[in-house]
Amino acid sequence: MYKEFFGLDDTPFTLTPDPRFIVFTPSYNEVLASLYYGLENAKGLIVLTGEVGTGKTTALRWILRRLDSSVLAAYVFNPRLSIDEFYQHVTQMLGIKDWANKSELLNTMGKVLEERHRRGLRTVIIIDEAHELSDYVLEEIRLLMNFESDNAKHLQIVLTGQPELRDKLNQANLRQLKQRVALRCNMHPFPSVEEVDRYISERLLIAGSAQPNVFTPGAVDFIFQCSEGIPRQINNICDNAMLAAYSAGEQVIGRQIIEQVAENLDMLPRNESVHASESVLDNPGSRVMRPETREDLWTGAARTEAVKPRVFTDEPPMGIGHTNGHSNGHANGHSNDYTNGLVFEDMDEEVSLELDELVSSYHKFRN
Image (cartoon, rainbow, N blue to C red; front, side):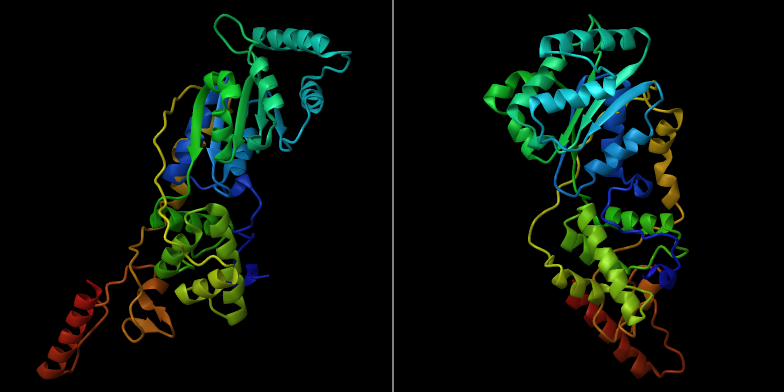
């Protein structure tokens, strides 16, 4: 509805996990590099955990689109499967059609995986929402990891889920599976307002915007507080804010609109901290992913080099540096230096002195 009003080719803040809109912020890039490292180096069992809405499914779909043609991958998005249903899904992926019992199935599967490995081919099973898997299916996954030779795994499995997955793997009855985990990746919310600003600006650029600074710094700062740095919540706030701005005829979105939207969505900020992401290993190996994947990872930030970093400070009181409820510095994408915008021409010394004292008092009040 608001695409033409803001000059967009696409809707930038949908809630669907569209890998076209992936943004290579530093914290997100760490997770993608970890997945890349684990798959390229045949790490066997990989576990990716993260809070709801942090972009796990988007990352998986980005990875799936970049797997080499030599990789046979199955993506399980509905984890509430019985053991028989799970094996039916896996056998369909491997092209195994005729099996009378589990023993026959495992024997045939072992031969197929061994032959694929001998030919230099990889086989990967990616299971989303894995925290919903039953303990029985997780035990079967552990047994599947036994398909290996002396020096290599014949099957790779990626489990991704909410933090509850880590709790599940810490259960005493699943300790054998936990010991098989070769690599853990943790997807955190964006740790800073600068990453949120980059995320918003780049999604606008991807959607065709000629002006990435649609949101003022004060608006972005409040989005960070309301969303707690979670991408899905950022998308929800921004999408509703752009709709509200379109309805009001405003092409620059300030903090006031965000406050209204956040209140309607019941997302006003709480006093909770957002933790920075943990550093992870990376590796330049290349075999499983298509050649351009490594370049995408290492140069993904190039799209936003044209967007100058902005200084995030609180917006000033009405009447200082504001026009029609918006900061001039915000509208132009600059930082809030309120003294630089004051020009004293044709004023006597007494009036200038009073204005200087007013600005000085304002800064003392802020500090």
